[in-house]
Image (cartoon, rainbow, N blue to C red; front, top):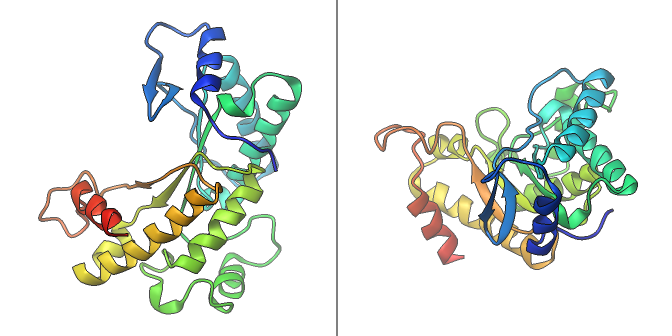
Length: 240
């Protein structure tokens, strides 16, 4: 795995040599980050799409983009792997350094592995459910889990896919799936356990920070069943 993480010194170095427009780089969380990033959600699970993403990562770096986003379930883990290969190649040829680049990924949805010959359902059942990594009683909406053992497993898989010792930002992915399936007290208890796991990953240096990535949760009104309040999430985190 490639050691290091994004730093203020490194991201400033990247911004200084970039020909981007004034104001393109902005300070956030003690780093200097590009105002746009490259996402890796869409596309079929094939070699051509992998190559396309790898080329895009290289083009993005040369165009002044130093923020890259993925998730373990995107394209059956192939998006993370494509980003990992592209960044490793960029570091090798001197196009960027590890401390100049901010990498985020997400965990929560049960992912299949597009490089595994088993069908997705069999892979998920045998890899996560039968082993107890993702307890059946903690899986909601047909495929979302944030149990501590499951998050530990997913962090390690993402680190391996990305070939990075430290993931700069690790998101809990669409936790509104859990919110709608559980009473408020049970949701808060489950979220607290997840936060404890992520805080441990920060302490051990496997991730730099954690957050939540939502689809509807932060956009819908308070009366909506998927509504999430940042103040509630912060309250739970503060109790851990």
